[in-house]
Image 1 (cartoon, rainbow over the protein chains, first blue to last red):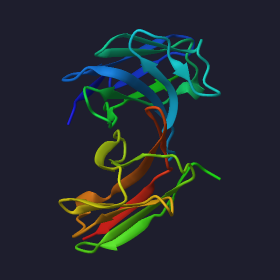
Image 2 (tube, rainbow over the protein chains, first blue to last red):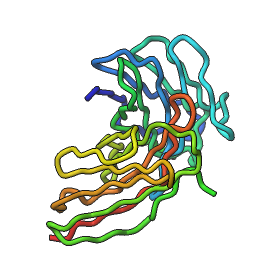
Image 3 (tube, rainbow over the protein chains, first blue to last red):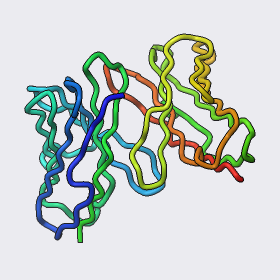
Length: 115
Length: 110
């Protein structure tokens, strides 16, 4: 299977600061990357879909100005949580699709805690 | 009606038994179906995918798809304690987007 990495694996920040999370496809070119959020004991919630070189498509209810997504290359997408607040604390997971695969491969996730 | 529905469980089976996980979906146009396993505190891991009606086997895992009934299942034979996890059913509903069920928590008791 294909390998997707995320960095950092966990981050703690103060309320009001911005946090950037990186998602990389290590051994294939990801034409599409997805960002999910998961709260404890809940399922994955898709936040946005991004295609390389174009603007991300956000799901209903997700603030595009708060969750900035950049997919500048076929191996890298970034999610920036701007002006983070405690309610943004969650497990953020990216996935990638491409390289001839129909499946989505998930990164290991980033646990964000906003104090 | 939710797009993808799973029994939330928890489902508990003894070691060595068959665990049966079920999923129904609402969009008749769905073409691709996936089962992911998620251990507590970790991200989902792809176990199997199935596109055609019938059964697909991979080791101890068998996925079954019935498009007429809008039903997909996952059977785990010879269940092991290491299979204890939450199993997520995912359906490709539009484009490359996946819709996930809420997951079934499986516990395999030694």
